[in-house]
Image (cartoon, rainbow, N blue to C red):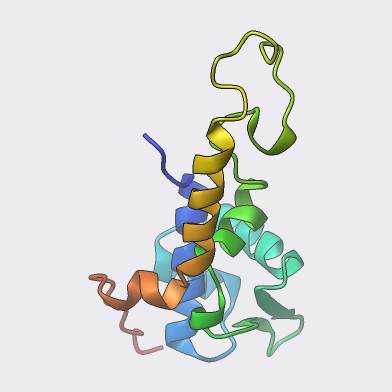
Length: 141
């Protein structure tokens, strides 16, 4: 079964929560709201900031904000930042394969891989969550 990693899932949840909050939010608050451990949340926030999807600010009033609205962030953006290049099999897009000379599927996966990349590029996080049963209500602090 093809599915995003658990870390991609967590990263998307964090991005959606940041969008719903619409204000500077600490890593600790995000960890609680997302029900993800603080170390995992901190790791994801660091990767998302390095990838340019969120902004981070230090200090007493610091925290995290989205860099762009969810409609401008694709599923592909998140997967590439968290999991790296998207390939169905190791030989896609020029990857090395020790069976290249004898494999009857040599190059065949590239077409399907490209279609998958196109789909992940076309689906924004806003579209992903539009009809979802994701009900996030900020608790009173």
